[in-house]
Image (cartoon, rainbow, N blue to C red; front, side, top):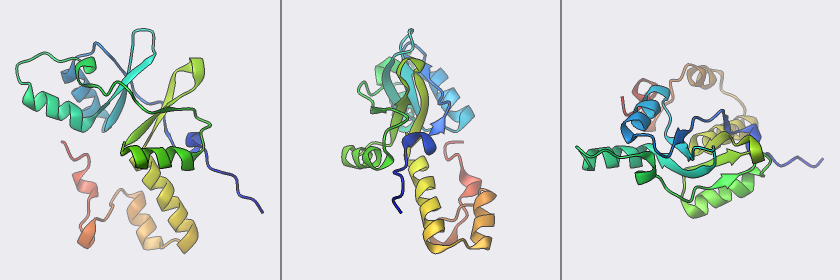
Length: 165
């Protein structure tokens, strides 16, 4: 039996928040903090994708440019990776690995940005595959559903997310 190839739309984070290119970096930082997001697409006034911002880039710019008024367009990466919701997941993941990027903006033609696929989404997919392949440990599954992810050495990480608060 042939298995179907997973598509980005099955694993992306839907309804991605976007920011305007002329939005202040302080407002972008606040949005990212409030919604615990690490990547945000930047759009023009017409809604066209013109870039992407990462939490790291925003925080670095705000730290090193104290007293300056920066906008999203001043710091954004102007060539984001944009894919269709129907893009095959293996190809998207391969590109993200080879380009060493943490996200792909999911855009559906004239509908605009419909989601974002990040390394966290890829890890959620991996977790699903691992559970299917190796079975589910009820104790581990319960801890995952409660947001108590375990880091190296068994250290609970759920209480430290989001890490920038």
